[in-house]
Amino acid sequence: MNKKLLIILKALEKLPNDIKYLIVKEVQGTFISETLRNIYYIKVSKNTEIFKLLCVHSIYFSNFFEEDVVIFLTYAKNNITFSYIIDTFLWIDKFIAIYNYYYRDKSNHITQICAFILEKIILKKI
Image 1 (cartoon, helix red, strand yellow):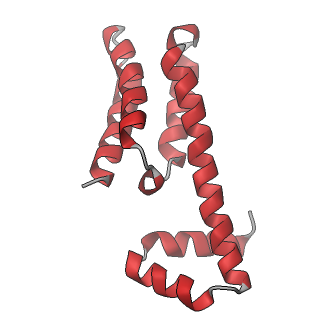
Image 2 (image 1 turned 90 degrees about the vertical axis):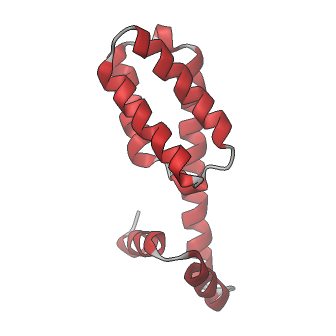
């Protein structure tokens, strides 16, 4: 990712929605609008890939080593764009499945990461 794209991405995350709308309206049809569209696509595609992996992990979690689940959950925690999650109940259901399985097995690290992600997903909707 080039530096200009990263700077635009970081700048837009912190802006209120009405200002984002004005920026998009002002630059529509220009190179910047293409860049903004690409940024949105990158974030949505990253969330989609994480959700696909989450579905696999939540169904077949007993087939993975605990270290692999920790690596996946850490990656998910650091890379999910919570404001771009549309169907929160599906995400919550998958993380709760992992949380419940490892809670019974007394894996505190996995349950803490799952609890953090669940909190972020739920608070995003408030």
